[in-house]
Length: 502
Image 1 (spheres, rainbow, N blue to C red):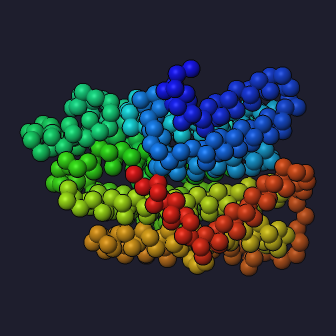
Image 2 (image 1 turned 30 degrees about the horizontal axis):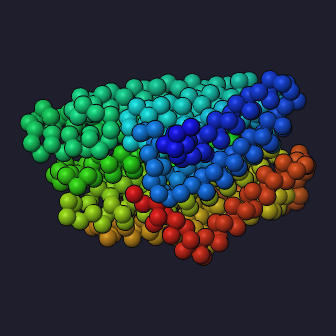
Image 3 (image 1 turned 135 degrees about the vertical axis):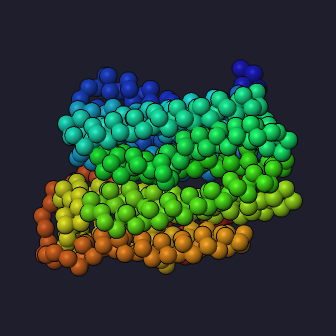
């Protein structure tokens, strides 16, 4: 084996671990049969742990593997979030009663396949590899969304996700074809030069191509991050999918979407040769979309009764907050690139805070569904007294999602607001602050139902005994501890985020 090939394979160790994990899980399922669900899940967790170990031992020196995959601190950051989230979702999926035992063993390989696609997606600046990663992530997600075949709402979720996703992918692919026609290249840096020249030196026709191509590409990214007006799939899919799948879509899939969006915006539109006239218009559109997305998500969440549907609209609102950072990035000029770093740092830190709190919130929702069959606010009434640890953890996660002390969500929102004010987008910061007040109302409807409504007597539910259920519950407590600890001691996260900025 040549030294070059060995270095490329070393750079892709996490992806190789994930691929090997998929193969081992499939073979085990064939060999052991219906009894293999728990065994397959354990080997899946071991494989995901191996992928995380390989990732944490990677060098921070940038490497381009096989000319297509960029292994740098930025991709390491996003792959760490994606792989670790997949491990937690895998653990929760092993104990979730909503997944039938006959198909539980096949659920693991599909979940790891989605993680593999997400890792490829955030690590490339080539449009072909970007599409391969996005479609691998999407196809696995479509299947998992409709996993509960005996439930009408799950089948509806899978069908809606497939139809809307195919439409968004087709529009994005058409946008990529226009960019290829403009530049003659599939590489983002070369597309950046062509976009800048077309806007600065081209005629009205070339201006129109840039606008149409950018709009179509953003449709695809907007769908993946569930930003308005490409969010319409999220509430039904989140509600109808098994809760572990909903957690995967809300955390890992959205993280991958923002990972590729930031890389695309930074490489294609924020190059040193950028046409500032075009960038100013583009940035204004992003800022308006951020304001509309967070407002729509928060206001609509107020009316929701189903917990997963409420958290779906919450996820849409958080996409709006994250787009604030993208709007900050696009205020950069040729002479002053500081806004790019400020905006990117605020997005990455907010993603970490969102990652911890959202994984925990959906994990708590799964625990209540497992034990009590609870899905609505009425079902939650008084359950905090029957499961005080889960109820307390749920409130900690909700506190972080609102942005209250001492949770890490406060630091995430503070950095976003600070970044927005630093570049003169005061109106956007005001809208975000008002939205945080709205979010406080509907998040604490859950807390009120758990502890201040209904019967305070102990309610008997279905018990979950064993090592794996114990680990699943322990994961929620650990996430709650992280939520508070990093809210007080965020220097380590901030240092990691600063190193990850491109």
